[in-house]
Length: 273
Length: 148
Image (tube, helix red, strand yellow):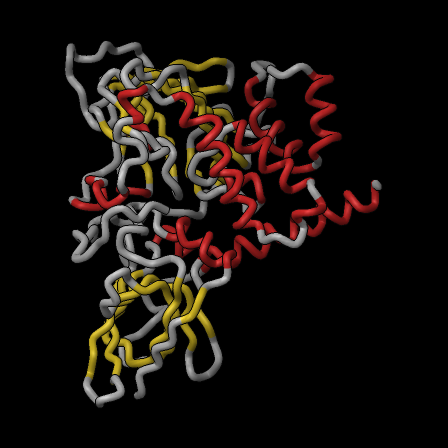
């Protein structure tokens, strides 16, 4: 939890958007938080159409958020479009936060060519590192006392998360890995291992040694869900990488079939976004 | 119907918004986000599916030949957020479509805007979100100016 005086200074300095994000991230982490809805169950979808929400639509980092706030607060940038500022902040977080944390082994193939992405080439669903932060819906349902199911709009993917500490079958790896969870106050903490080597959200590879700790907490008014995910991989990451993702409470949303993925008929290598 | 095929440079704002349009798989290997093209013709099929909606069109080129075009959209997940349904575009409609061309110049584009002869338009979710965000920025600048 951040020091209250430091938080106040940052709020005064950076303005409303930072205040909103701190509220989103900070308040739910308190075990004293009270709410009318005791679980995270229900349908969540794209974040609010705000600068911070949009920046964290896919994934973001504190480094990127801080940089974006500085850009937004600089009057010299008022005439620049948001997409331009967003792209500059994304580049900054990639270059100053992500790349320095990649190992020499991961840097050998970084940045990965999007044209080699198996999800693009062969319509293969994402591995956990990308699936956990996909756009659009995330439906959370508790099944009995021991299971939670995550159902994502993207790829129509489903994850089973064990609340009873069920051990991972030895040496077995899967796309989404083996997840166990516990409650830390009103925050759901999901720990996942046994993930097949695949791609990270930021155009780098990870090994099957990847371990991910996801913390899901909702805002005090129940309208927003924030994921803070810590990824560790001794093969690909020099130190843990922490990313965030925001969803909006969306009970009206529904997940439609996801069965028309077409293999590409043409593409060009070497074109990075 | 005459082929309307106009290539022009894209404003930076639009260029930078292209990446967000395609979430399930890579956009950049197929489409050139730095350019836009516009074609006009008749819709022969619209499939409102995931991961990407698809539209087939017939365009008559300068030589009078019918050319088939494919227009790729964001998916149901994205389009339904701004009210699209499977009936938003119907076969037989005459439409003018603007989008990002492929790197190879094939008869395919990634959707940005559709205009009908009656002046109505269809847009993806991005422009609506961006409008709200820019308004948030204006309010933020206003508060900042009042404080200073």
